[in-house]
Image 1 (cartoon, rainbow, N blue to C red):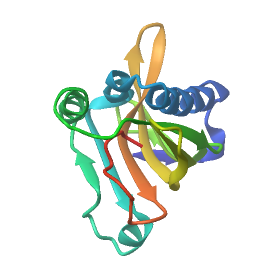
Image 2 (cartoon, one colour):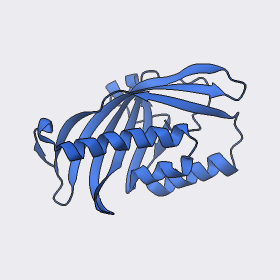
Image 3 (cartoon, one colour):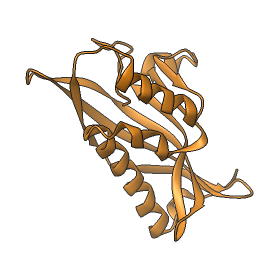
Image 4 (tube, one colour):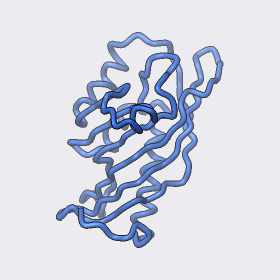
Length: 172
């Protein structure tokens, strides 16, 4: 990637990245899980790992989807196959920091990170802090309706803990 100073990103692209972050968590929080894969490129990668594993350079994590089709299968399984105790998430995200930006020869691309906090609410109303951490994203701007559309080429979810107290069913 030919990089430029991240502070030179246009206001329009910065706004589009921020909108992507907000739309992503709102889709999950509102149970619109079928929208989740649409935030990624066709070859998009989604991985969840712990901070300690990430710091050590360990590639093993809690969850990995190597492309959009794997994400679609995960949502199908969530809806049709898996048996899990009903619950919902509510995310709080911090401001997105653009770390790098430039072109890959075809598209404008950006590396960014966003802190998150996720509260889980169970079907009986119990609420609990489920996960905190950060999203480390590679974002590509693809041609779309009326202009460029930012999509996640990869999202690495780096949870502050390697432990979750239940299954990781719903995407973070």
